[in-house]
Image 1 (spheres, rainbow over the protein chains, first blue to last red):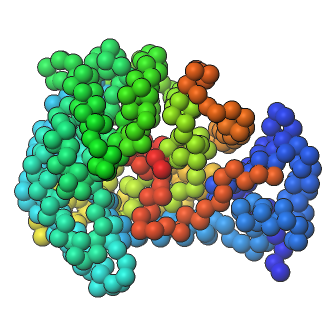
Image 2 (cartoon, each protein chain N blue to C red):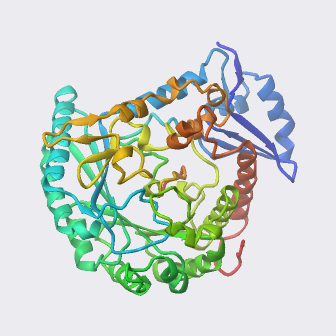
Length: 467
Length: 37
């Protein structure tokens, strides 16, 4: 039997009550060790006794690995399998690079005020059709998953074209394709009738952003003419929630917060809990506003209120924990889990079968560069070919060919994978770290506390306020 | 010793890699590493 040794991806953290937390970034496993077992577990980690039941668990969970196991190689394999998986196609479509809102923090790099041309829909369909048919010829037993995210601008401005495209896509189901439609919309035009039409053609996942309660939301997410939008959006959501439970969909409400709008986020959470809290089809989460470079200066209106990196992360976590408590969400729900899980890559921008398709057929590999012809990575032709330009080809160089020794040796590699590619490439060799080891240790404490609390008491809205 | 979160081999997926780390929220331009389910 090959001797065992500790994984290079282990975190071992002493907790305040003398218990121990173990976390492994490659497997995502988290173990809590009671105080009376700590000495033994630490001993077994450094000197494993193969037949001990605890060793069996530690090996199963990835904290102990065979001495000759090359864990970095395993991580590399994930990355390449995921990057090159032609059976998963993810297209972010921009049917309207135009918007009825005028949010100051909009991160669309350049607003072009375009609606998607019919020839672009045709080209995208042809690309998908060719790939699905080829996949079926290669492996008749394997489905091709096509994930279409409708984004913008504001996608509901191109409502009829989206519905028509999804109807056409259905023909690919005959070749084993599974189609998953997602829409990110501001929700202003999303009446219940339109919503039902979209679900009927296969778009069943939605996201709408509310920036807190009406008072705060209407300062930021207003119409171009400055008029408020909160009540219209909220009324649409309430009507959608009245639909019978057999209408299947998932609806996410996202709260974008600034340093100055945290109280408003808490009020939104109370409203959500009261109006949608019992409907499993609805969920809510919160993220800080980020300051991305664009061609405009409207971000200046709020830039002094944008959270710093760590500040945003801490506030996001506090809101997530409160949401979990109020909504009685188990911490195993990934969206709210403070501890990251292993990932094949930071974001789909590294995949060979993921593109953002602009309204005129330009392809963007990163969603923060949308709308700028100079930053496009290629285009889709009318006959369905993906034509990458030189920048696109450079972007497609794999993370493991970038010679990032610090990343490859980092304990956080499996949950980070080099971080944001745009950041990484712009930093000339310096890593684009999001998580630090300190963040991980802090999150381990929080998760164990949370689990201990969950064991002791039924969480309730009244008893918990973690602000 | 209690396993609070079990190990998962991320290659054991069904038909979607999105076991993922990039839910809808990635469209903020900043992937948060979490998903909804």
